[in-house]
Length: 358
Image (tube, rainbow, N blue to C red; front, top):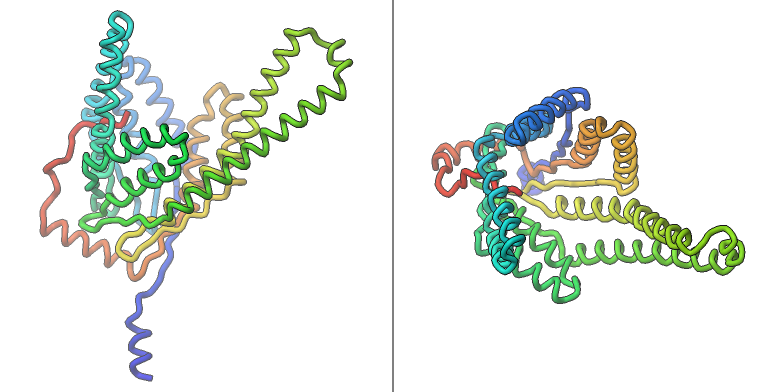
């Protein structure tokens, strides 16, 4: 009995803490409108400072318990990255117009550099993210970046996209599995089979909607052939067919995208672990679809002025669908990580000081 009681007392306590988002549309609208005006007035230069202000607002309003995240990125570093991007795009545009062969070579060169850029961008973004004053980090190698961002996409293309779920899984494994909080690494154990099932169901949904439209169109054309020929000429019939295709695409996307996005988001976060702590994500496809559709129409009807409110609605829903499941006291884990970070010193080497997140 004593041994059983001792084992029960020594077992870790499981606690759950919901993620919360405290930002409001009215607050963010003021930040957004100032960012927009200053970006226009400075011909885009202020966009780097705008990005920092935006990320700081969203990070600082994302909480776990009584603590929030923070973003420490330098606007100058972001501006450097954007100038590099503009320079590369300008070089490509000039050469493809006047010397197409050189332009193609420049494009290939940019494509070959992209995995390096993406790896450095992940390193920059995570190093400049913190929780309770403790920085995140990224340990993914450039070599692995070339595998997941270059080699696997090529293989996916040449296999008729049959490898798309596998490639998607490996990209997320690279991102989440190489992230660390303080000195402790995250792990990623989502199943590849789960990714394939999500892709399969999304494909079947899309094909089902497509076939429904096609069958309805054929049946309608057969039943009302004579009436249709009286009502419209050939050009009008072509226009009606084009409108029908666009309607098909819109309806399919309104069904498939929320399903795919919610299921992928859930499987990714549910497969993410750190030192016995895990994340539960319960994004609903139906609720996500409602937010996406209503945001779209509200933004269109307000000529874009609803955009910051739409961003807040989406961030609040997706954030508050997440729960941190801790095996023990979270504050003790964070305190331990802070001690480790203090013992080893701040990580400064190999932190790329340019944000290349194109």
